[in-house]
Amino acid sequence: MTYLASVKETFVDKRWGIIAITLGILVGVFSAYICIKFNLVIFGFNIMYILSPLAAGFVETVIAREKYGKSTGAISALLTFILINIWGWFLLGYITNNPTTFNLITLIAIVLTIQAAFPIFMNYLLFVVGISIVRKIIGFLVYLPAKIQGKPKEVVEDNEIIGLSVDEVFLDSLKIPLVSVPNTPIGTIKTNIGLVTGEAIAEEKEAKNLISKLTNIIEPTQIDDIYLGEAKKVALSRMLQSAKDSGANTVIEVLIDYVSIGGFQGNAFIVTATGTAVLYE
Amino acid sequence: MLILTTPTIEGKKIDEYYGLVTGDSLLGANLYKDMFSGVRDVVGGRTTKYEEELTNARELAQKSMEEKAEKKGANAIIATRVSYHNLGGTMGNTIMVTIFGTAVSYSD
Image 1: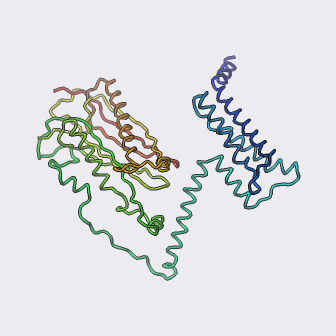
Image 2: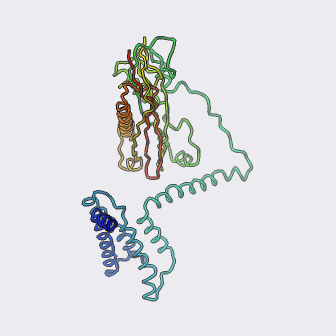
Image 3: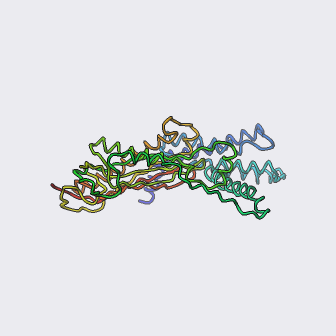
């Protein structure tokens, strides 16, 4: 009895979710019916394969957001997708005794339908797997002449230091040096004021021309390719500023930390500086 | 509340140690989405927004740590460490900010 009651309660709780999914499937099937009825075909490929799951998912999401309060995960889009594909690829051929043939257009259609149904999965395949395969091929082609001639790859010495980086200039200009230790014999700490932090984001330099853009794909990232010094300076000066705002004159026990926030479109680093603001004498 | 990264408080006596207190918060940084919307400003490019968000996330973590320390009856947190982690993802990145320290009470 309690089991039945709990089942009933779940249904009452989730009634809008279930209604949203049901309506989504109905809209999906109805749109597929219209597509078949009016024969909406582009390049021999019925647009219902893309349109119907999208319509179902859209209707479901809108209703679920309005009434249920949260997303239901586009279950109806997936169900519509499966139903339409069973119909299109198997049942239609069985009824009319004209099974679907496998050619370039049907292949593209399959990719498009899967893209519509599983966007994250397909984007991963396209952007991560696809791009790394292209990268490997370009790398192979670029180094192929050298490999045939048997020449070793040229090593370019590029380690000379060209002046100080931005953050070093900044650190040298400070009256009281920033330290990463709790105590220095230079002075005595009068009062500890509290935790201060500073954050900045270091971006990758954009490639200047097309050739360096292409070689960027295969070459490993160099240290000069990122505005690291600039970001360090910003993070440290923000930390120092918040220390000065709270009445301190320097910061001790400074820690600098880096976190990569990479994406498909480029790399970026978060640079953070943490320390204790103190009044020094 | 006094929050320090040092193990001692200068000129003050630590009366009691209450133990470890922690605070965490998450920041969903969708780099992917933002790049298409073309948000750019002069100073820090598209990333200034993230810096603000990051500060908010860190403040949130710090606040939750402070609350825990207050509940224990502490009036300071010493030897605090802040760390940032990338939880990854294909469509964007989630940044986790964690902060931890030792809750203590001190007197002059």
